[in-house]
Image (tube, rainbow, N blue to C red):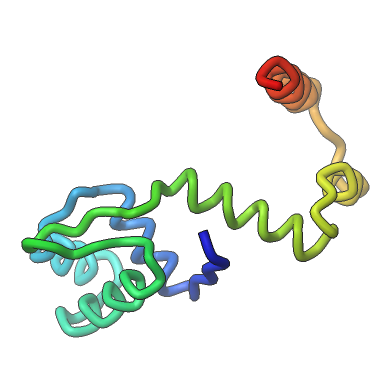
Length: 121
């Protein structure tokens, strides 16, 4: 997946779609009006921007994602670590934990993830 940056407004729309998909486009218009105060034209303009970024598709009056929310956020995290820490996960974790102490539960979850990745290889 190519690097995709979302504006705050695009991210709000993406969250609405991921939460309720598949969504009839008319239902999306109603959701956006209620949650974001948007008019129909604004909703379709923003949806077209997300379609151009390869995240969603509006076909036959139904909006569906082309990438899951989890996969999108995983890619965003990967890009952040690449751009900010030269791709080094240990450098990222060192910076993250410098100002925030990890709880025992978090440490155990991280160890579990590491062990699972070691077993995959």
